[in-house]
Length: 205
Ligand code: DGL
Figure (cartoon, rainbow, N blue to C red):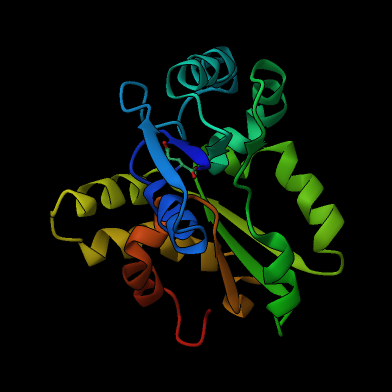
C-alpha cells in the first residue's frame, strides 16, 4: 500500500489531499500542518529556509511515507530543492498553474493570486519565462484570503467584503481589466473558490 504524507502550513493542503484521495483511492494519506509557524506567506525567505528542510526530514522520519507532497506554493517555490536534498523519499511540490492558464487565456492576460511570499519568488519568474511567453502576467499577493480560508474551514462565515478587498487590486493595473484567467496559486484559495469567483469581474475563469 502506498502512503503519502501531505504537508502544508495549515488547512490549505487538504485541497491537495482530497485530489490525491480521488486519484488514488487505495493510498493512505497522512496530513501534517505546521500550525505553530502559520502563516508561511508573510514569513521571510530566511525564516522558511531555516525551518522547512529540517521539519520535513523530521516528519518523514515519523510518518515514513513513500512520497512527500509539499501542498504549499509558498514552501515549494522556495525550498523544494533543499527539502529534496534532505529526505530519502520522492518529494512532489505544488507550484502556480501558470502553464494551463497561459494555454487557456483568450485575452493574453493572466492573474495570479498567491501569498505575499509566493508572488516575489524567482521560481515564478522562471515559470513565466518558460510557459507564459507573449502573455501578460499580473501578480497579487494577499495574506487576507489565507486567513479567511482557515476560518471558513472551521465553520465561520465568509465575509464577502473582505474577499473583495483582497481580490479587487488584482484587476487595478492598466491591463487588469483584461484578465480572463486567474490562477489560485495558494492551496488555501480553492477552499473559498466561490467567494473569490464572486469577487472577480464576470467572465473571469
Ligand atoms: N497554503 C500555502 C500556499 O499554498 C500558504 C498559506 C500560508 O501563508 O501559510 O502557499
